[in-house]
Image (cartoon, rainbow, N blue to C red):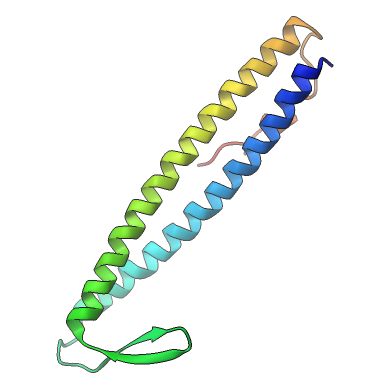
Length: 128
């Protein structure tokens, strides 16, 4: 196998790892977003005069409704932006992966006739 093809395979493996890391980050951000939205919805059903506490590390600190609501709303907004950024990053990595895979296929078909080293680009290489 030509050294250039081996380099492309290594790049594909690195991109696959990057894609997995980005997908995990997106899933974590999406989960945090869902939790925050649920908390925000629940907060809308609470009386504004009710005693409120927020968790800061291991400590509960008293807060007021407006501050709690505003903080949650800001958290939801920032998480929505984060999820969107990670989705775009996933798309870019998938495009890079597809382009690199095509380059490798052309390189191998032109030289060794294409063969088994296409494993890193198999099913599951991209996100959902």
